[in-house]
Length: 286
Image 1 (tube, rainbow, N blue to C red):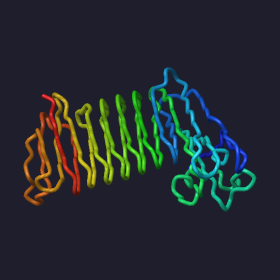
Image 2 (cartoon, one colour):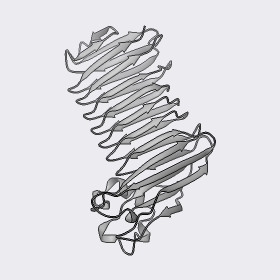
Image 3 (cartoon, helix red, strand yellow):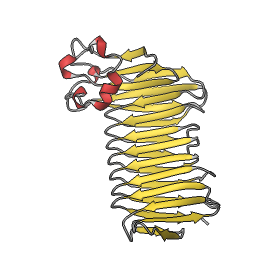
Image 4 (spheres, rainbow, N blue to C red):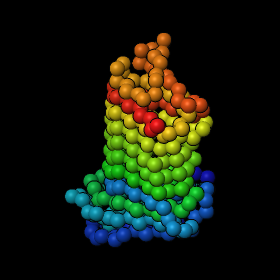
């Protein structure tokens, strides 16, 4: 439950007609705060800001059903967190272009988790976000990709049907998840990295921190891990027998033919690489 929720601003057109134009929000943010963008239909792209000002631009694209003017973008403030979200009209509650007021507090959550919230409106809202150094960014959408590049701070990207691509990001924690999309990390530098997908592929090319924790999971996709020169990591691998190709020597577990382990260098970092029916490839850059 939110500690405090204040509606800072919103944009809404008249029901049935009209194009609301681009949504733009801008505010100077201190390091340590979380900026979260929750889309539904459309992509999210996050890049580095040049100063302390964060900026979110949402661009509307008409679909086959509904009108862009029925989509509302809300800016909600919590303690230590700012949430910007797309709110699609709930058919039975849309009246004169506005949602019932008692749904204001829960509108963002409902928009993400209730199938009925969208009705027959398939307007796309594509977001471009500029994130200052030290701001924790979270981007989540349903139908499209999340792209995060060049950030200097913690970062998370989530999609149901789209890919999550994270590149040139340095932070303490970097997470990504999807149901059917691919997850890729390239040039990332963090001590805590997680990636999980059901049917997509996972690719990790990045730094390994001493005592870092790294976890990669795909139920049916392929996982590629490229370990850098000088990496010290202990590997815990779970995969179908014979579906692991590793440049690091792995020793099969006595308790399970699907599980194996290995050590590279000091072994100070810990990495789990798990798949149920996919393949695993572990490379090492000498």
